[in-house]
Structure formats: C-alpha cells, structure tokens
Length: 370
Ligand code: F6R
Ligand code: MG
Ligand code: MG
Image 1: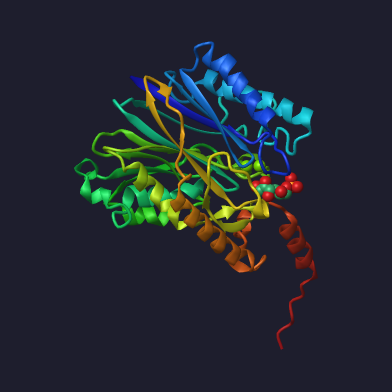
Image 2: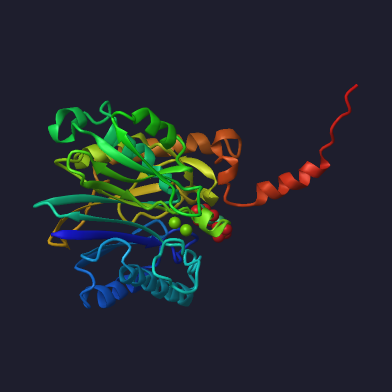
C-alpha cells in the first residue's frame, strides 16, 4: 500500500514564555484534526506531539505530498490553536502564522512540513524527530553519521542491503527564489557532501534515498523562518521523518549520533551555540530558553494505521547524554557573548548588535598616516 506521512508543525503560543503550549491549545489542534481530518476520511491516522513550544501534527493518508487539503487541515488546526492561545493570553499567540489567508501549501507561510510517500513494507518502522530552539541544519550531523559514516555506523559495512550506499539531496536554504538543491551519492561523493554539510545554516539535508532500492529513507523540514519573513520570527524548530531497518540503518544506528550532543545554533533568542539535548517526548524548554532539544517518537505503521509511539530518548543511557549536553552547553554559556558562545553574525536573530554596530561605526575615526 502506498502511504504518505505528513509532519506539519508550528508554534502558535505557549505557557510561561516560549516554553510549552497549553494543554487546551494542543487539545484544540487534536480536536480539529480528529473531526475535520480523520472522521471525514481525509486522514487514515494521526498523532499530535509537542516539543518545547511547538506542536507537531503527524498524519498518514494516501493523497501524496503537498496535497492542499492536508496542508489546509494543519493550517486550520493551528488557527484553532491560535484562538485558544489568544483566549488564554498565551505568549506568542499565532507566532508562526505569518500570512492571514491560506494559499494551498504551508510552505512559505510560517509552519514547516516534512512529508514522504512510500510503499509500506510488511513492517514499517519509522522515527519522527522533533526539535525546539534550533534550525533544520541540526539534522546534518546525525544524518551524515548514520547514513554515510561506517566508522560511526558499522551497519553500513555489515549489511549487504546498504552496500550500494545512499543518495543525499541537499538544499541551499539561503536561496529564496525557489528550491535550489543538489544530489550527492555516498560513498563516492562523501567529501563533497561533507563540504556542504559542515555549514548547516546554509546547506540543509532535505532527503535521503537508498541507492539499492530507490526507497526514500528520510525527509527533513527545510524552511528557514528568518529567510521567509526577512526578520526574526522565532527559530524553525524542525521535524524529520526517518524510516529504519533492513535497507536502512537500524533504529539504534539512526539514534546513536545524538549521543554526541553536537553543537547547534539556537537556544535563547535563536542567537547562541548550544549542545543539542536528546529529551523525552513533550519536554519543555527551560534553561536559557533552551537548551536546544530533540525528541524522538518510534512508530510502526501498517495499512496507514500507526501504533502507539514509543519514546526513544526515555531510556537510562540518554540520562548520561543529557548530563553531558548540559555540561557542554554550560561550558559555552560561561563564556557569555564572547566568540564562539554566540551564533555567527548572520544568524543573530535580534537586531540589537547590528544597530549598535551601525551607530558605533559613525564614531570610529581613521588615523591619518604619518
Ligand atoms: C528562541 C526564543 C526565545 C525568545 C526570547 C525572547 O527561539 O523563542 O528565546 O527569543 O524568549 O522573546 P521575545 O522577543 O518574544 O521577548
Ligand atoms: Mg517559539
Ligand atoms: Mg519553538
């Protein structure tokens, strides 16, 4: 059976500051998807999660990717969530709904989407990764290590199904006129791939396919809010769907790169470097409006119907990684705003530094040469 998985997410308001949506808000989103999507037969199944201040709607259906009614369903659900956020006086009500009227697809309108269509295998395990306080380049490192680096993932040399390697599609997210993408094959083009992926705010993995079977393994939401709006409107807080097992890396091989707690851009005011902390599903945001978090739901889908989600970072091993991430992050935070503690200039999400620099520039004087 050919099935489409659509993950569409948005931040439309939260309790505290930018910490977690209220229960009523998330319930309003669920109710809308249940009544207008599942009960009316548009969806086969769905799940709604939160990570930090974002809501993630995961839908299964047979309509293919970019199907307007599916995108409208999610958009309208976020509008309903926004109404609740306004009624409750939540912070940042409607923050990610940048346009007033829906026009066929959530892309370019604030919410992010990651969708993939595939022929369901007899058993179809997949992982939904959901982040807060960071941008979509967050997945460059773990998806490189999981699908291209045999030193990390020995499965790539152990399993004959993966011998042919994988094909990465990478997007230049600074190009805003249209989708600008390149496809690179590993292992042959692994170094070239590395050249792009080392710059995760500019080049972002969009998808990965198996070269042996042509099956799609992964899809990432690639939108950059600050490129869409031209100003700070919050971080993108991306979502990725990754299929696992057999011709793909195992669930454990896909999860294990997160044990690095790699440094990403995000955290408070979207303007800092921070170690990514793998957290339990539904985690809130706390220390320094962070840290940047990733959560992971493990699910099997059969005839479009999803099992319950298991919480893949809710296991004692990840307590060690969470402590390590806290130590790595604190190591940077102790350095305040100096050097590598802060994000590079073009990623600073607030204009204060730029405005002050412009004022100071006028006061600089150039000494005459003697
Ligand atoms: C980061 C984020 C927060 C806010 C910060 C200030 O993505 O959402 O760290 O940037 O709380 O928020 P405002 O400008 O709304 O007061
Ligand atoms: Mg937010
Ligand atoms: Mg967020």
